[in-house]
Structure formats: structure tokens, C-alpha cells
Image (tube, rainbow, N blue to C red; front, side, top):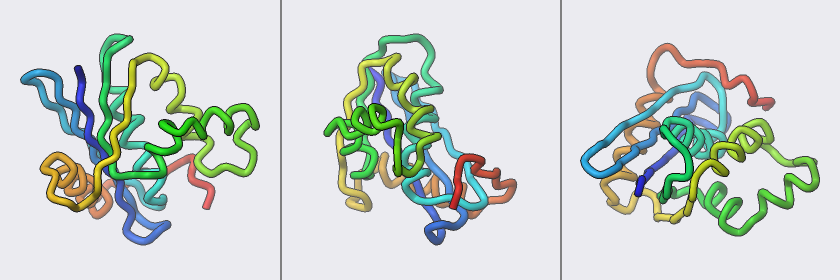
Length: 148
């Protein structure tokens, strides 16, 4: 069982942003983070999940993703994303990231769990630190898909 903890941050919305992801598997632990020049909080929340799923080696792994993003968790767990796919993402934001998410999501047995942000959950707090530090760091990348 892989546990993934994710968070996204944006300094201004839009503004500089970043994500933080922690992957745990048994005794193994990996932290991922990246910062972008101009993006949104929702994009960073979703990118945190994508980066974590893309980092997994192998297929068909059971993955539980803990996120404080209702946007991401509800979009998947309530099945909204599949309606968006049927409508070719008409009038939906972040189409590029959702299209990137779908194939890596389908490679595994993914379950999302929503957790309240900034409530003292150690892994969520660490992800927030990673995301904020990335947003404020140097060498920020372009968020190529952001069209705002």
C-alpha cells in the first residue's frame, strides 16, 4: 500500500505557486516539490497528485491519496471528471492537467481521502511547507498549461 500526501500553494491566485507531495511505502519515504512563476492553487493541488502518481514505479498499485483539496478529491471521488471527459472538458479549467491525470490514475487502484488542511496532520503540514517553499524559491518554472 502506497500512501500519498499532497498539497498545493499559490501566493496570490494566480501568482507564484508550488506543490508538495510525500510518498510512503513501508519504510520508504520520498518528498517531491516544484515551484512555478504564475499559476493557481487548484492547479498546484492537482499537480501534486499527478507528480506523485507519475513517480510510482510499476502498475496496479493500491494508492491512498490524502489531500486537503475538495476540488481534486470531489472531482474524482464524486465522478465529476468522467462527465467532463464525455463533454471534452468544455468550459472546464485545468483541462491539460486533468488529461495528464487520467492515464496515471488508471494505472493504479487509487482512493482519495479528504483531510482538513492546517489541522495539525504532520504529513499535510509538511506538504504545505514544501509547497510554500517551492512557490517562494528561485528557479521557478513556467506553468505551460496555465492560460490565465
